[in-house]
Image (cartoon, rainbow, N blue to C red; front, side, top):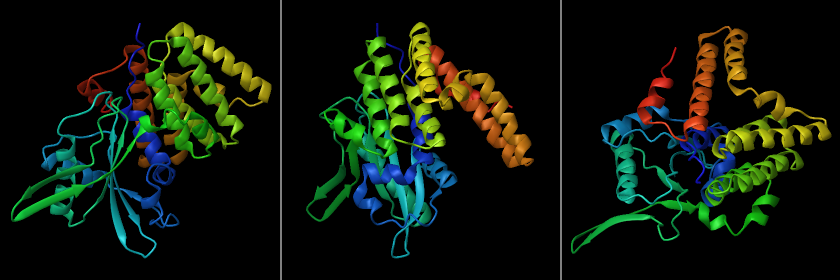
Length: 304
């Protein structure tokens, strides 16, 4: 049987936002080399919602519009589109063009348009939209990376210290192991174990493990076996980062979410706690059902 399909938008969005400089350095090193990473970058969520709404494109959950600064002091807007569907999408090139056009129309900024393609088609490689007439020509090109191009470079990924090497491996192995829960369990353990062996800090381990755990869904019985192996491994290393943080996800999430609000003592803290709890509910529903509808997810994310 095919294993349940994971909700990939949510975890990709979270890991992109948490490690955006590393994502750019891994996927688009030439563009990343132009950017002054000593200055803070800004996610332009309100602006992106406006261009998606007014362009009639709909909200793309994992897409990000980010303001960064070049080393020469000039401002750049980066439009990073994440295509997580398992199949290629018609009209993709046009949508990338419309995004860029709407951003310029509304904000007089020409964005650097980039796309991360996570689908399973070798042949689908969009990077151009245009038209050519005798007296007029349009040539819109955007940068793309294809995760499939790393499938024969696993050894290279395993030796990389960039956290997005782990993200790419986890995503690739989701597709490769969709008909074998034992193979998926083995890779889930291998990737999680490597987080410790690479010497990552505790928070990095937790962030990357959450991505691995979210996308590499296992049947309940196999998940229990995985946890037993992971707990044994952590006990041998005398660390319990994941075991303590993740074993009882929902209960921990509720407590941690409330704790954020109490510690901060501010409305911002309360909102962060609520967002954390809502994300965990979406995650649990996805683990149980495989996928949930956008309407259902929207209702969950509006819970008090």
